[in-house]
Image 1 (cartoon, rainbow over the protein chains, first blue to last red):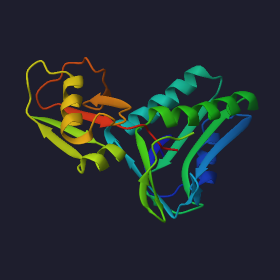
Image 2: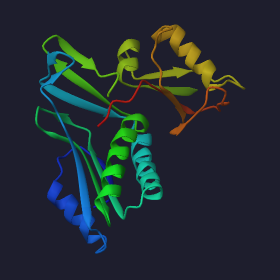
Image 3: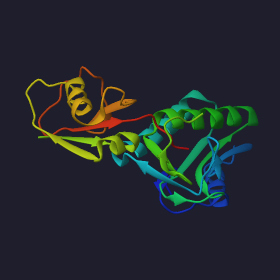
Amino acid sequence: MNNVRIQEEDFSIEEETKALLASSLRIGGVVNFLGTARDFSEGRDVSTIEFEQYAGMATTALEALRTNAMESFDIIEVRIVHRIAKVGPGEQIVLITVGAEHRAEAFDACRWIIDELKKTVPIWKRETTPTGEEWVTEHP
Amino acid sequence: MIKVLLFGTLAQKAGRRVVELEYEAGATVAAVVDIVKREYLGDEAGIYMTAVNEVQAKPEEIINDNDEIAIMPPFSGG
């Protein structure tokens, strides 16, 4: 499995974590960020979320993000998986898995990666609400 | 011809995902954006990033015939 992927199908946190650990025996701490679909957003119910990407740029941007993180933090390995699919509340959307010798750098890198992902990777989400479908234009 | 790709809210506003424009020698990314705003999006389009052939591009970048220009709203992945 590539360590950076955009895919329709669901992913396994356990498999991604195992793949990360298999990359180095020097990893002493793993931090996972899992983004999931909520059933409520901006004051209204959300029944489904659908994702769109600019395929030509999105994977490249994710790979650049991983490279930047590896260069900027004292970490050993990073894996990123983002789904482009129609998902319901509670379903998995994105997983960032960071392995480092120590926990502090793994936490810092994981937080940085998800924050940067939202700014640098051309992916958009559209929520289905009781009043219709709406593109999400800003994401905290 | 130039192929312009629109995404998310911008595609919704334009009522289409792809716009094809005649190529004009020396045209910039900004000039393409202006045409698309004038004809499809309006002034308050909410554009976050542009790209030429899948690489982020500045407004002053000169485009070539058969380029693919992407006009993108703010990202909302994750």
